[in-house]
Length: 105
Length: 105
Image 1 (cartoon, rainbow over the protein chains, first blue to last red):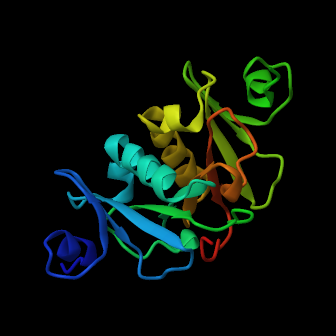
Image 2: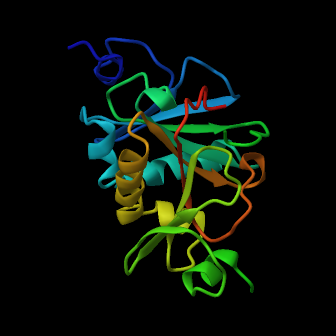
């Protein structure tokens, strides 16, 4: 099944990549709702529950990028299912910042 | 230094507790911005970066509670610093759901 994140990881789709190692890739979310809007993605095609069973390095990388790019603060979030507007099956964590984010609902 | 989360963990302040084990406690956020609005909190007084260095069980518990209480979906998020409106030093992860949450900014 076609997965845009797997295509980006395989470099068959373009993305602005901010970080990459053997397990994790970080690239810009094309939505650009906030000045910094990154996706932290395990290279393995996990679902959200599988990723969050042991977030590990994905969490560390999210915080490192947030601190580096958003010195005034940032928000890490992850959406599960319809009510949260999850649009990609491939597990991912958002990092948002670069502006005052306001309340989180 | 006074910490409301440490006071709740010590049962010196009231809270509606949804889950507790030796490492983690989950209680309702008094803000009640969404029908389900939980705080998943390590019992040890860590800061956000210390928690997110190895999210581990806190992530698993957040997903388990989200799935149980929000069958149509939920959002997990964590705020770092001023721009994200972080108000408590003691590390914590929010679980939001029980309604259509809309965009996440």
